[in-house]
Length: 284
Image (cartoon, rainbow, N blue to C red; front, side, top):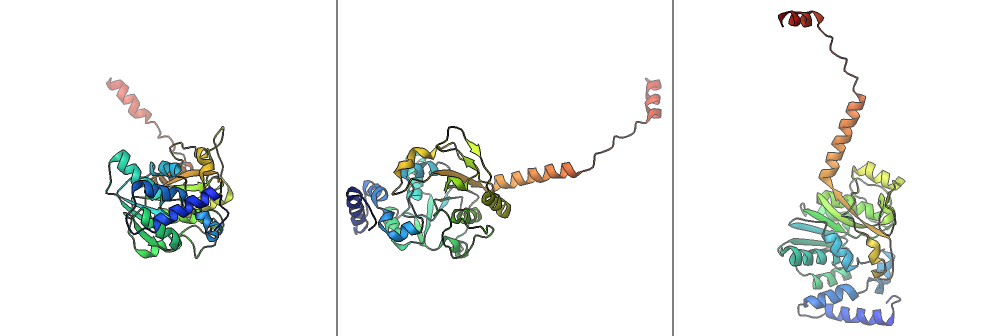
């Protein structure tokens, strides 16, 4: 087990014991597992850059996605998917939504199946997910590992080093909209934890937008810094970044139309037929 406090280690053991019960868990037990089962108990998880989303932040992500079929990429133990299920049930009274969770770590999948048995769990490398013929979804959610994580391949379009941007590219191939928890340095906006928001276009983000044709759209105005201390063992600065395939298409069409207008030669004014104008005056 990794370096946990005695209290955290005790809660983790209790949560892990719940996941091994043969009976179904109660709602309170599900939440206990999600909040106290520690990914940092496994050193390999830390090396993989996997850290679970704070539950309240996961609920904010759920507010950004709609539709009947939702896919959670790099799902961990299912915090984002669980938050979406709970939000739909409590706030929208929609309990028949289809959830699919994709996760490579078999231990996470084991725990996830216990706390969210309603979801379809797929143990697979997210890089390979487009080969599984899962069809299309209405929205995608993700909190992928951050940074230059070793991977088995590339997304369809992006060829850069950042794992989270590969996941976002894959998400756009699966669903027309989505919301993603990304490190602040991997988004073009700086909002959370700032007195004044700003936009920055770093070279790697410019490459991502150039290679994919995607724009990272800003969220509903969520300052994620309020949950800065609720991550397990880390305190990353993150943003909720959204993708919207239709908005990307409309923006690209507008930019193309603007370029076309700029390149078009100026239209010469039509000459005035002075003879015709004089005839009209005489008729009047």
